[in-house]
Length: 272
Figure 1 (cartoon, one colour):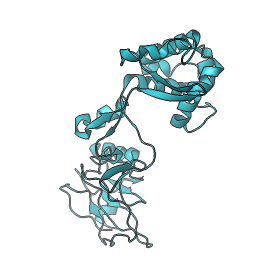
Figure 2 (cartoon, rainbow, N blue to C red):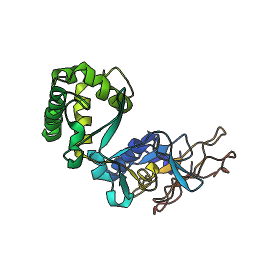
Figure 3 (cartoon, helix red, strand yellow):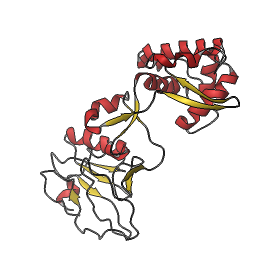
């Protein structure tokens, strides 16, 4: 058995942001880690390409600045974040309606006049729900009775009509299910993060988020090993920060026979 394998205490499968964060935490604790990834780059779902000079994210992407792990692990100014308007556009039978946060953009307050988007009762119920979720500490929200999101909205006094007009279409894209059966505790925590944070995208695309996270090698080997099209894994190092991944090519890159440590690390090349 090689020295690299003997020093590997943990195998992390997948170099998405969760796998990379896990590897960094383990390495910081002095644990030998090997990260394996099936695709040709790090980031998991957070991938971007450059097409004709444009940065194109793969799939729907949005970056929320209020997630606790974001502030713990990333330097936000380095991402050059581009914020979105804090609100949504609702396509209704009466036309397109704008629903925004008036605490951030007071000039949009007339959009919330009763009768334009919803009645006074629904607006008041949504306001009270939002104020509680925004101000309450997470530990309190985690101890609330756990029901479905739809039940939680009903308990808050939101009518079925407004749920169908606003909450269900909006939350379906967040939870990836359209029956609002997601845990109400998850809903309250997600709603809180949206109210407290800013939804935005990095200037270089969503791939800029995992780019600074290649597994470092402060102690012992930490190999990056994406498999090739053949049966034997080959290595290709993760991108360095600030470099956007290349668009997929019809011909795969030439295999590198020796797995390497992550770029910019001081540790030696590891052998299989």
